[in-house]
Length: 253
Figure 1 (tube, one colour):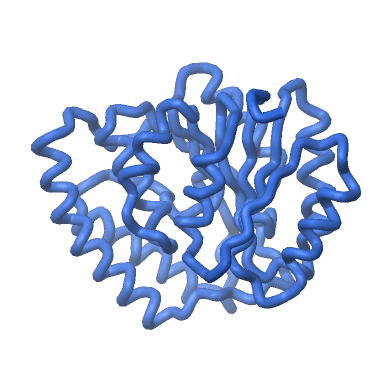
Figure 2 (cartoon, rainbow, N blue to C red):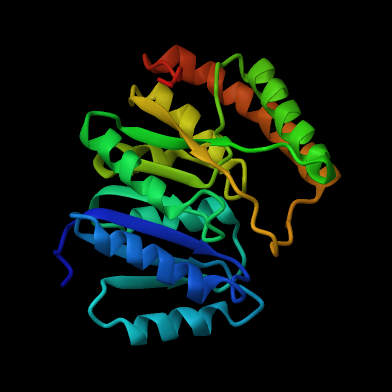
C-alpha cells in the first residue's frame, strides 16, 4: 500500500553480494521480526555483475508477507547515490542503512533506534575492533584518513565511514538532497551537512568483526588520493556552510 508508513525503513545497498546475501538477509529479518517495530526493507542494487539481482527477486518472492522493495540501477553509480535513492523512497519514521556484510552486527539496530526515539536526529556506528597484524596497513590508512580529514575540514569528526547510519527521516531528507558525492565520500558528507543543518548527531560504539571471506573493493593508492581531493573540494563547501548555516557538526559521543 503506497501510503503505508513504518517505524523503520532499512536500506540495503548491494554490489556483487551473491555469496552472502541469502544468509545475511535471513539474519537481518530474524532480528527485525524480534523487535516491536514495524519495518520495511529496501534493496538497492548498483548494477552488480553477479546474481545479486536474481537473489533479491527470489527473496521478495519467498517472503510475500514482508514489506520489501527494490531499486535496480541501470548502471553503476556508487554507494552514496545507492543509499540516497533508498532513503528518498523510504516511508519509515526512521530510515537507515547497513552494509550487508554485517561486519557491524544487525543487533546494533536496537540501540540506534532507541537513541533516535530518545531525541537524536542522526545515529551512527563508532567501530571498535582488534588490530590484526596482517591488516595493520588498513588500520593506519583509516587513522591517517581521519587525521587528514579533521585537519583539512577543521571539524572534530569521529568514525564517519562506517556503513551503519540511522536518521530521523523528515530531518535527513533535505540534507540528502544537498549531498553531491555519489561514492564513498558521501558517508562523510552526509554527517558534516547534517551537523551544519543543526541536527543532533550521536555515535554508538559497535564491535566490528571483519568478514573472513570478504574481498575488499578498496584500491589503496587511487582511493586515498581521491579521498584527499574530495576533502579539499569539500573544504570550500564547508566555508560557505559556516557562513550560511548556524549548526554545529560536533557530535555527541
